[in-house]
Image 1 (tube, helix red, strand yellow):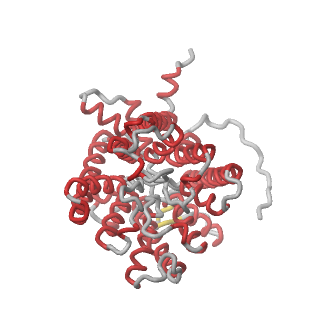
Image 2 (cartoon, one colour):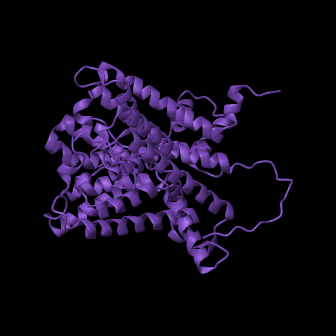
Image 3 (tube, rainbow, N blue to C red):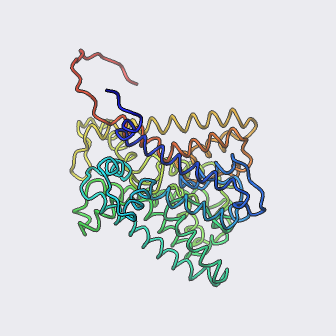
Length: 446
């Protein structure tokens, strides 16, 4: 007897996750289309609303118009709602609604939550959701309080509190939306604001499983292999990324050239952190040198960590691929990290993810080149990587994109948020046992 559509969906959690994000984007787009959402009382049009909703829901930060000037208070609330739900995950919101209504969370919902949170067990999944939401509330609350100490004196009590809450949520969720009108350029030499935003970005980008592991183990040595890999890789990328930007961009008068050494260092490391899918910028991205811009592309493509609010290839995936390549060069059979062997299934999935991500970036770039004839190809490539990795940095071309390109970028942001993981999970499912085994053939590589 054939399963109905609903039953088929229940048996395909990755597909449900994709549909739930699509619904969030559509709802946000419809609300942002309303004249009430616009600062001038006129609808921005469905395509612009869809683009903005996609960017907020997929915690990207690319915008077709200045957020501060374009949207009304209602519109900004819609954007903030999409950021928060998109950062935590749509199924997390559903779970919270179930808990609020005191409804039982069934097995199918628990399986979907497991897929979304990237956990390996259903045990304690509801307790994990509660801890996740409490952790998010505490971190965002602390960020808002700390930011308000600086923003209230500058913008007054009402705006200062509102700006603090908005930017704390946006930074923690790695969204990159701002209400200052120029991202963090106005605060480029302010270590207080920069360090708070950087801390929120890094905490949001490590992944909730890492913090649960830290809370339970209390010692780095006892952490899981995944947590160790995420922490060490993240710190290494921030350090070497910041150092590379400082060295390659330090003499550029359009960005860092006229700054003091301390300001250069702060701004370089801020860009290194924010390139890990956050999307804030304290310098003009379009004025950066090609060398430093390629460093940014590299950092954007890798992104944050699995199970976090960040996008991209993911730090653990990147590290598994790097370790595999190094092991192959050295002629080693096993891929080892911290005296632990990495399984062949994990390695295979890492390369599948890498292929999907590269293909998506190249296809997006190709379509943008087709639709944006005359625009700089590197700028379009930068935009494609930023959209895929849900970063939100741009070389100042987003607002001038055609309708077709806006739709392409919207789709890329959606796929970047849920697509690679969804596809990988689908491919990683156990299929029926292969009954026929064929003779091995030789293929020459390289």
